[in-house]
Length: 197
Image (cartoon, rainbow, N blue to C red; front, side):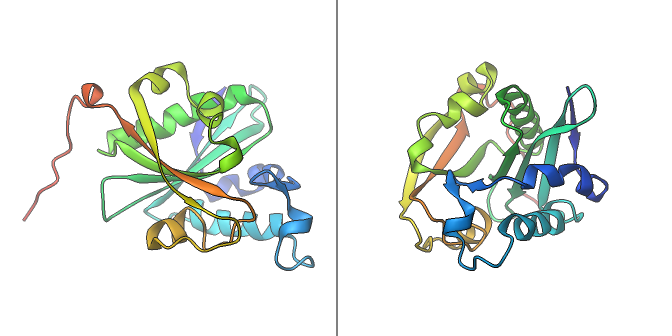
């Protein structure tokens, strides 16, 4: 397995991960506002322009198998307002073994930049299993979490940054939970310097 920070050069390689018929655990064909629109193609184009377009705050990493086929991608947004990041997307071939090492790399990237807390948004139905699916034993021990709030299906999140970044200004067709995950105090060996003139 190889983990790489993605760029526009990887656009064609990641496209198969956007051919899924489900999003947030529901069928795209029956839950998208306009059935004539290819939701996966729209999602793919937005993802490429945001996360592969050399924007300073938007990043994506990919896990490749031994044949250099991309198996999983994780993207995230780094806030300028607070020392936190937002886990915005995960796309996978369905094989869990690629997810924890990839999330480890994303966490390492953010810790190296003084970011010890992140937010994520999940279908509430899966809130109790996503840590088992995504976290390595190493980071499951180091990080704790609390669920911050719920956004009912097909409603707008009232908080501006999560609405723009986590929800992508989209009315999600299922009840969702927004979770804050944070590095436990005993693992915060070096704090970032946050002052300047």
